[in-house]
Length: 516
Image 1: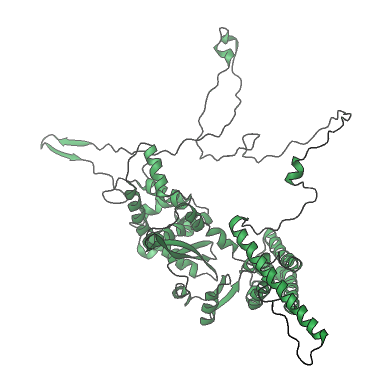
Image 2: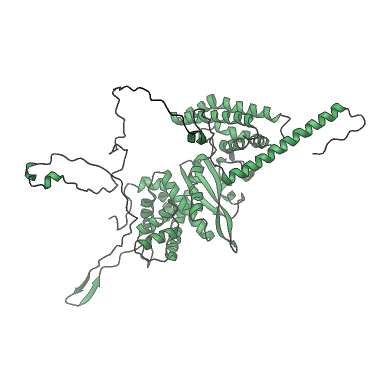
């Protein structure tokens, strides 16, 4: 800190004022550096949740719990009798412990004969009823070999031999049944089990297959299913409200010992379906071909490329996410606790209105009116507070609160848009929940060896997540579609996307020979 120099005409009071300003700037800089240090520590050791912790004065700390407690004096006791109502259980519970299962779950009966029925005087007893105890058990995942017995017959007069044709498979000269390929995909992309783990399970079950064969089967399935995934993307682009985000993923080798960084772009349509695409860059040029003909509302986070695209194509109305705005105020809590609390309380009240709308199941005009009557005053209050904070003279640019205020200041119009359009969500959380499959994959199979492999990840996750959003079992869907796509008309490919497949074929899907 460089102290001011006295010049002719400068009074002691002026010097003191300059020193006070410098000290204030120094304190702000120290606070900013402490905030950065705390952020780095949080990234390494801290929790990632942004939930606000409410202090409970009645809750003891761990050290207080471990302290020696004084011996409690024995107090007289009395016996109290009362009646209490039996706890309500869901109708499908079969045990007091709350075990529930559907009719599809296999049940094996284990008889437990009474000792009296085995004794010498067993004829003196008779069974009048049964009581059942249920236990949840588990077997290791099992594989089945289908052995087709094909008859060879001889025509007696001509002595010619004929045999039943071999059953057709999904792929030529492949030993894999469609059920195995569907299970392979579901295990890897829904439950995030890499192929090497599945290979280990096969070996432990006594089946020897090369790992390269599993990779080859996955690639061939990806080529079959890509047209359907492309049609899911086309369906998303027809939405009135389209939510868009991106998440990183490594694919392809950049140099020796280093993988190339790429991005999965996620499109969420208003029909509750999602489509993924992969690219090696985060540039807006990747999604521009999809958006240049789009007409509707685009809901995103604050990434500047989305602003550029919306300005370039006026047919796109840009809305932005409140959760990302809130995140900046969460980061400023340590430096500006009072101001951050005011902001978070106000945003919390705004979200409370959305929670009330969800519980009341309001839609359309009723939803818009409720937002106008209850949400808009809170949004106005938040931005009025925001204007007051911007006029503070003691805020420097490095202060995290300044960054939070600057973030929402540039996006006020986009943040307010949801109030006038009931189809627009207040945030992109619904998309964030659906794209978790990509980060979960990164934690398990880590990366894709090639860009083609990343494209296959986009195809499979498009179909699996869209199935889950539509309430479809991805395994049953894959077993049906992998067989159906070979003869289904290309002009009717839209019928095979999950939400429409459920209506047309979901009640009576194609099955593998294992289930027939």
